Length: 116
Image: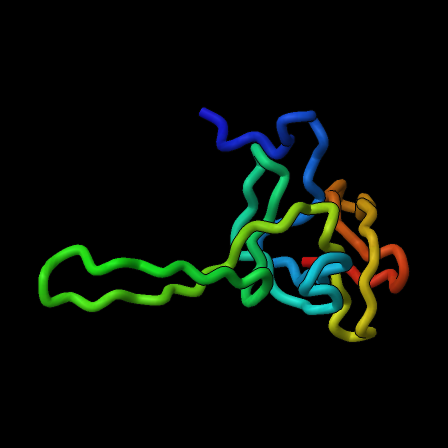
């Protein structure tokens, strides 16, 4: 049995992977960078560590408990993030090249840096 499909609802492929370093290019967290924690393929969104933080107030469930304020990362649409090169401090699109062994390797278009 195969794992989850890498395409979204409208059949666009997400070119980002878990663990990629990305920069937010629009919204309230513009220019912030972070690592992708999770990818939600159905909604075409990613969750980035430390970005798009939301606050949830949790009521106490039992007597004697105290309420909590929980901070968590909310999903961001993939069109609002871009791969980021830490060496050159620049955001870039990616392309796929095929090496001598026939393996596909991602690389940044602006810098030529290979992505793991």
